Amino acid sequence: MEQTEHQNEIQTEDIELELLLEAIFKKFGYDFRDYNKAHVKRRILQRKQSLGLRSLSDLQHKTLHEKGFIDVLLRDLSINVTEMYRDPSFYAAMRNEVLPILKTYPYIKIWHAGCATGEEVYSFAIMLKEEGLYHRTQIYATDFNPVVLETARKGIYPISKIKEFTANYQQAGGTHSFSEYYLAKYDSAILNQNLRENIVFAEHNLVTDSVFAEVHLIVCRNVLIYFNKTLQNRVLQIFSESLIKGGYLGLGSKENIMFTDIYPFFETLDSKNKIYKKKVHLP
Amino acid sequence: MELNNTYKVIVIGTSAGGLKVLKELFAALTPNFTLSVLVVQHLSPQSDGFMAHYLNKLSHLTIKEADAGELLLPNHAYIAPANYHLLVEKDHSLSLSVSEKVSYARPSIDVLFESAAEVFLDQLIGIVLTGANDDGAKGLINIHQFGGLTIVQDPAEAEVSAMPLAAIQTGKVDHVLGMSEIIKLLNTLSEQNHLGKQRSI
Image (cartoon, rainbow over all chains, first blue to last red; front, side, top):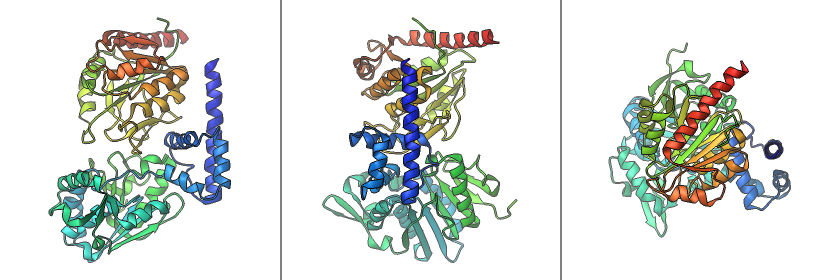
């Protein structure tokens, strides 16, 4: 008996969740309908609970009628957990296997999609500087969430993170002292201004926008894990179209293109670090 | 012990001392095990999938690190990768998330238990083994609430008793058992599933 009641409750909640996501899309243009539901539901229910609301219908009402409340939900639904040189072996592989090839191009364009608060974008900037490539590189760093992009633009992070960043930097094969790249001030580490020179931060929504630019390397880490198969294919198609032949794609450590539509057009450069290369001779 | 239910999925949470008991468990589960197993063991963020390889070698089950999007299969066990939360979707596929740590942990036992509880309802068994904090206690409450079976390793026997004790304190635990009894119970369930299938044919 009790189970059926629970099932009923869950069913109602799932309908309400669908309606809420539909409302967010229709009113604000942010499309979470093809996100994996378990994660979205967890975040939304946490918000409902912390506000003491009775149901997701109440949350929908608040979202539609209360000015500015959508920003709270956007923050809940975008994952902004990142760090400099997250998964150091990925950066070491980039430095050793990808940058030597990119070096052969007169001008390098990199698209960092879903850059969140920017830590990994600056990690690339530092690496490119150390390899003597930064002056002829353009980095496009995009995210759908304007709030996190603002943090990214500033390049100011809590000083408490520096210990971890420094350890990561070293493991990733950094050739200098990490302390050369920031200024410690009170509780903050302010990254050097000149790291920002060739980075353009811009709003871009992988779910609803299209090809962004033609680039040599796309980095998009721990974004696809939140998408269902349909959406993954859509986004990977955009990446495939945005890359030059022979261009590179770097994903998060648990992401994979193996079972997606673009797989025939790519070869695997590094299966552990999830680095792929777009084939020069397409099938 | 009444076992008149058809359980399909087992979720297990453990931290300190976990590897040893997981080894004991997976080495002893019978061939053609009919249930799927999901495991969260607190690991250092630098761990690299060693545990899944190690356990896979000594078990009849196929044991692997969970990949995003894969579908749960019987006779398989999926370990949450270090630094990712593991969740279950409605269609019984797995998903991963790097969202904030929950009670200092990622992967979090509570996150797995809570998401599995409402997908599998009364077909779920939740087990909390040895460990040094209270992760999993909240999740067991959810499993109980949605009709699942809740089991905790006997704290007297656990290498670190804090996690089993915290779970027991919720008052929502169906059975407190030693490892050998847990193993016997799970193998019996698998056996009954086999018999049930034969009968229905």
